[in-house]
Image: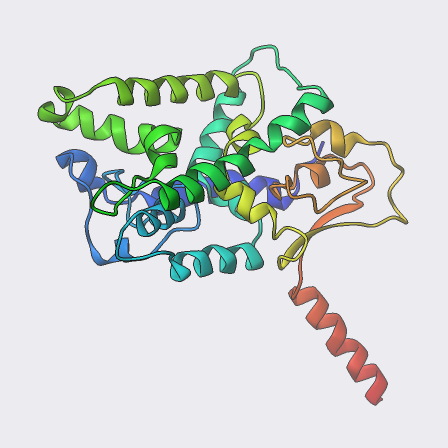
Amino acid sequence: MKKSILQKIRPAVQTAAAVLFNGYAAGFAKGKIFTGKTKLFCVPVLNCYSCPGALGSCPIGSLQSVISDRKYNFSFYVLGFIMLFGIILGRVVCGFLCPFGFLQELIFKIPLKKVKVNKKPDRIFRYLKYVILVVFVLGLPLLLSDKYGTSSPYFCKWICPAGTLEGGFPLLAANESLRSAVGGLFTWKVFVLIAVLLLCMFIERPFCKYLCPLGAVYGLFNRFSFFRTKIDKSKCTACHRCERVCPMQVEVLKDPNSAECIRCGKCGSFCPESAIKLEALFSLEKVSKEKDNSCKHRN
């Protein structure tokens, strides 16, 4: 297999994104959360606000924080931000920019026997991320509040393994007072994190497939985003090699722009006929062709 340019640059882009989103090195050294002006803006990925190095806010965490505050009912800014990235990139965000997604890929490279979940249970489990989105991200913060009218960010508090890894452990390591205050809730969060990381050894991107609410939202835009997977049917021989290598178990030939596709480009790299490509809606190649055609018509 000859790697495509997309596959060659993807690890570098993933590394650069992780460093960029968590680039405040002094925060890790001091054990303090960065509170600069960039925290007013969301990054496009699941990236914990409490991570000492985080330079921006997590869109899911921000959405919950506003919903759970008695002064506000909904955050149109955060929702608009998520929709903007959904329309422009779709789940390209998951495949190229998400640090926790990158970590899952690295763990999967550990040489152990891999497991491919059967289609029927796999399809059922995939709905979990939508349940988490509706119940933990939106429903509970909106419906459950204390006597002061405030609520909790339930997804961040009870589920998010990225927050435990990026925020919980670094802060505990640098602050003795926090370590003495650790209780049952953090123990539960550590259990969730360990369970996800163990699954990553055997199943590709299990958190992305079954639990990530942000991936669920971006997936809804996959069919309409500026970046889409295109199959050249005149070249395709229906060998299904693309489907066998897909980390998200997408039925590429049947539904190339599935909500589950993270646009990693692996299917195109393994296609022996080079029939699969990730294309931008307004690519330079298309613009160039349109200009050439326009010039021909004029002549």
